[in-house]
Each structure stands twice: as C-alpha cells, then as structure tokens.
Image (cartoon, rainbow, N blue to C red; front, side, top):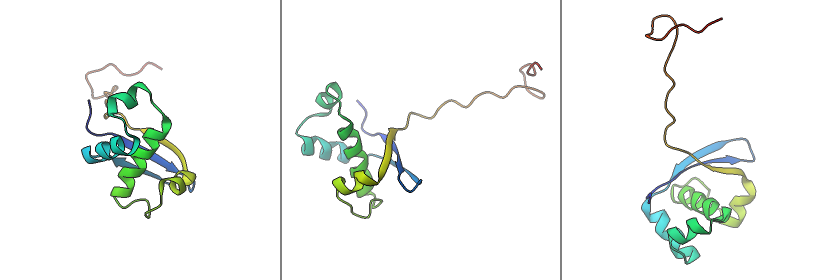
Length: 102
C-alpha cells in the first residue's frame, strides 16, 4: 500500500495546484473518518480523496487555512496524478527509428 498520493487540484479561478501527501496525512484521514485505508479503498467515496487533498494542501499552507467545507466550494476538480508517464521515444531523422511516413 502506498504511503503517499499526488493530487492535482483545479480551482474555480482557473489555477491548479499539485500536492503530495505524507504518511501523516494518511494517518490523519484514517482518524478523521474512523476507517483504515484498506476499508476506504473497498468503499471509496470522493469525499475521502477531496479531504485528503485538502488536508495535504492545508498542511502545506496552500489553502489560506480554509475549513474543508469552504475550500470545497472553490474547487472544480481533484485528480490523482499517476507515476510519471513514460516519455515517448523520438523518431525521425537522426534517430535509430525510421522517419514517419508522409
């Protein structure tokens, strides 16, 4: 099981912010909701993810100390960020791959 998640949060003003949780954020979430992480995964609610993103942002000083119920009204979307996507290999002149066909 992972000890951290990275979230990309899109706000109503059009800005985005990324935050990565720490193990202490996970522990705080378990205490707040009264469930362990495995139970939360088996009965996933969007509230869990949004709360975890908010908590990590709040810990990082990026929420202007807004309570969760206020912060959530300023948010368009919260998405988890996957591990780095593989960078596509270059093709074309000067590479080992054939150039793209026209």
